Amino acid sequence: MERTNGKRIAKNTLMLYVRMLISMVVGLFTSRIIINTLGEIDFGLCNVVGGIVVMFGFINTAMANATSRHLTYALGIADKIQLKKTFSACVTIHIAIAIIVLILSETIGLWFFYHKMVIPTERIDAAFWVFQFSILTSMLTIINVPYMSSVIAHERMGAFAWLSISDVILKLIIVYMLMIIPYDKLITYSILLFIVYLINWSIYRIYCLIKFEECHWIFFFEKTLYKELTTFASWTLIGNLAVILYSQGLNLLLNIFFGPTINAARAISNRVQSIIVQFSNNFQTALNPQITKSYANKNLAEMHQLIFASSKYSCFLLFFLSLPIIIEADQILHLWLGIVPDYTVTFLRITFLSSIIDGISNPIIISAQATGKIKIYQIVIGGTLLLILPISYILLKLDYPPTAVYITQLIIVIAAHLIRVIMVKPMIQLSIKQYTKNVIFKIIPVCLISYIITLLTYFCYEETWLRIIYTSIASSLSMLILIYTIGLNDTEKIIVKSKIQNFLNL
Image (cartoon, rainbow, N blue to C red):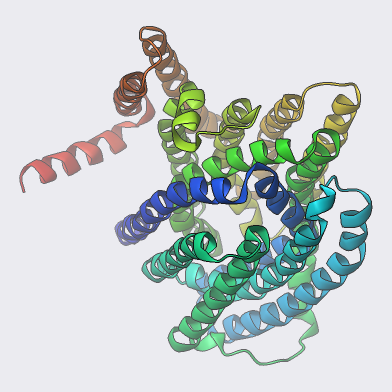
């Protein structure tokens, strides 16, 4: 069983990496064109205005976690009747959430748009239409959650990869159309993006209807199931609300204090970060269903090993890819974009560090959700993360620079991870000693030593494009050697040796 699971995880991960590589290449290509086509101000407006709608989508994020957990758990215990009921209930709830987001966006959101946001007068009308199409796009995203969760719960990562690639191709077409359509670029971009999400929702729905018998939605009301789903989502809501508030809330704070130009810097750093984080997300997407199914089958020993592997490898993947960018951020951004807004380099560096901590934390989060007992956990973690916003507001009122909010976020994200580990310990009988030994003591020396080696290489050369190559080589070689010598345990080293030997014997 363990070998079968390992092969499935490896196959799923490979498919997700194919998806990611295509997404990354297209994403890097299109980002520059979109930024240059829209311009710094419109690009910043697009992200901050859309962020208002995303903020109201915090209810959906909570319900998405509930949907993923309950569908995966039902598959883990092989209960087909429960699976059908769960899917239909999730679709019903997500339709209701989409309607709630529509109402909130057109009332509170619209008031905030006109009375609190800093928008150039000549771009008010364009920003209004961006806001409206962002609402429609958000509603489609919400309704699509049960279908996407079904694909992942069934571990059909090949299909998930191809469906995601179709999304990337459509967004590539958007870039071309954006350049040739003679109308307002900002409005055109928001309309085209909505059309892409409409097509994606249609494709996911058709695929699930064909492949999974439980995905034929019927309306029914079973009080116990709806209560279980909404209760889980309600407590998850606290943690997700905190994440939404400190991400989109910080976006709005920066807009209020510094204007849309600083939002462009934040948007660029977030876009680069999201591309790199896909590497870790792919690995975790393949592992997450196994973590939940291991708990459903009462196999805690396997669950612990999956947590250790996911945390450790996610960190190594993220640091391996982000280290050269952290060191050479200034030169890379100028070569890539040409125009780089102020603070973008600093934002990007700190964002990468926060993302690495998030990557390490994800398996702990999935483990807590697998138990279903998340009330106290979400209150504590959500309360901790919510501190980011008021502390950032106070610092900005005291005339601290915008980088202060990023440093605040990093410190609190680290604190939240430590609290997570302590709280999850009794929930899944996790040994903190084993976690520290198998994760923390593996991560710290690998990352610290490789950072020092790469930094020394950086200082040895003049600022040219060749230095980027040298630092990337130094980073890659040092990481690979250190991961093998320090980061892997004896069993993992034997597996690596075996794979290398098999490859050489081909």
